[in-house]
Length: 408
Image (cartoon, rainbow, N blue to C red; front, side, top):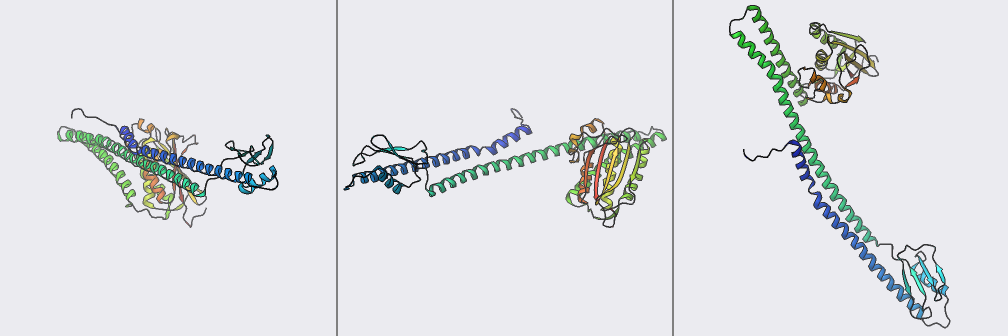
């Protein structure tokens, strides 16, 4: 297709997030407009109140000053009149015609006071300084609070919507990436044994091979077929666990016996490469678990140790009791897993960089299956930094609840 434009996942993510954030622009303008309106209304109300206040002061003072009296009044009487009308709490200063300060309130001025000079009557020429209005009517304050609340709600709603879009897009892109990696991994893992089987089958069909060579080729075909079967079994097991189709029951189960059975089953494979499995610690431990689930758990862990447990692979399984739990430690003498990847290795389809360098096959589902099964049995599975000199590689720690009849 000519003149096509290719956009990567990052560009798509950025574009969608940008679209999600676009509502912030009109929302910002709306909030700005609401804020200006509120501020202008505040200023208008204050100005109107100050104007009314000045008018009231002028009328009251002029009437008091021009009111006919038989005897002249003192500045103290003027002050008493003003405090009676406007209250004693209002910041105020009264200055006589000669410039003497007759009265000054204890409350200091705010710097926005206004000065009124009496024009008529016996106090003509006197100056009265009164602070501007500082108290806003309650209904104006409530309107301002309501406006501010609406602005905050609009802003928070827009941010939440943008955040929701971001999470959905990010999760969708991650799912696409996992799906793509899964397809790539499956294709790679299946391609090798299928290619080997094809070559071996074509060689057998030629009819020119010696009987001993034919037997060896058949053995190799069986091994590659087992490899494909093992791969399919991993996917089926994980899928059944995710859908709840693999029942995990919690009942009294002989933990030590399960470990010994799995170790015995895998011992020939370890022996074939001069490896070994040793079991130490408590004997006869029983837990609240599932026999089939425990078998899958320890099979996966020991198969991992077979692939990554050093050359030759050596594994030690230690069983102990810790409080109300059985603590099982599985250690090997391999390269180990970097501490930075201790949590990531339990994610589905994740493979450690160090283990990829070893050239070992796998799809990154084994440890995800193990953790899922452990949690279904109300236990935990974690990866610790090995402190054992004899087994310096990976150290997996499994905690499972002891059965009710087990001694702690």
